[in-house]
Image (cartoon, rainbow, N blue to C red; front, side):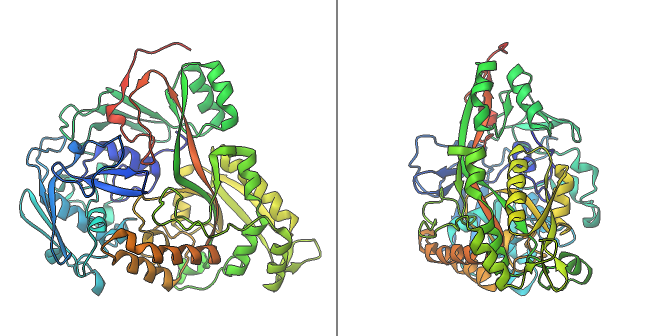
Length: 542
């Protein structure tokens, strides 16, 4: 893989790598299953499912901690009955109290979980602070009750109450201010099909099958090793020689060479869940960090300027030159795969440098004596950051730099090691960056665009639009998910008009797999969707 996990702790882990690995180590209250026909996410407990399945590839519910659930008639509470035979890897039983304890961690502002918005409907949240004594009841070890301050649709209640638990008996004495530094982060005790065997930071991470797992069973493959290899050409070479079995995001132009060098490699494709974007700091990040107050960013604070930047970037040429048929121009962060909500009437901004220039000059950015645009004595000059080792983003950054130079904007490029890059993003230290996003399959974007920047931990650009907050709430108040569509249509129009970031393209991810891996079912839920069911044939020499 390109970069390491940041934390193997579901409360604070923020990277995709972290969530993939914690998903194998920790237990889940429910199992999720994506319906590709409708774009809706289904929820499964041992004895109940939200919707009947329309697809052939049904997810087994046997990994769920919940036996069943009941939504109250007024939609203000949901009650789970948990199985009584699930244990943490150290032998202690998993109980309803583990969930209540962990939800307090998710909601603790000192810990600053990126998932605080999941608690936004719990009793007390409307007053500014969740009242956990009233919001979450645990009358016995196998009964877990969540109470909401308003009616909540069943699908959203299931989504928001199924955050991953931690074992209370191990974490209860860790102080919130010491939570991120706790040694327990390096020695996670979970209950999933795998457990952590070894973690050499920035080098490799080894999981071993958890022989005591009954959620649903120990992983078939005895050991899974994640190697951190930032250099794409080295990753590719190791796939070709058979030194590694899986490499994600193979360039389409490399398919033929890989399969010629090693005929025992398959290319598998999934999508559309991941998009790349260029982030613009909408607010003055340094000023906000110092004062906690909001003022527009001197370069990117004006939506007219952000629209101009999008029009100045030849997004289609990035797709043509790198992704080919595996890239789709992005308009907002609602994927075409989410068919029930996607607005196909919005036309993406075309590559139009002449119009970009008009917009910039209307906003006061005029050519300076050296050709670089300036306004009030400030040059339009900035550094575009991205994470090292991502060949696709390197390619895109170079084109973006050339495009912007042609309209009088000075853009320098700087690569940072992945974990440093993502930490700087969270600390609001970057004015402009290129990154990617893997969307949730339930549309719930308040953690990305909510105006409360302390709670919306993924709102890296500092985009503040009260109407977006309202639309998210209005949509979430609809008991039938399909009735929320008009709100998501308006939401997409606002993002398209305001361009808090430049949405580049959706990616049909192309993953290289050794043919010795049997039973891999990739879908939009991820490359490692059913990794605990994979089996291995004996190694084959290329």
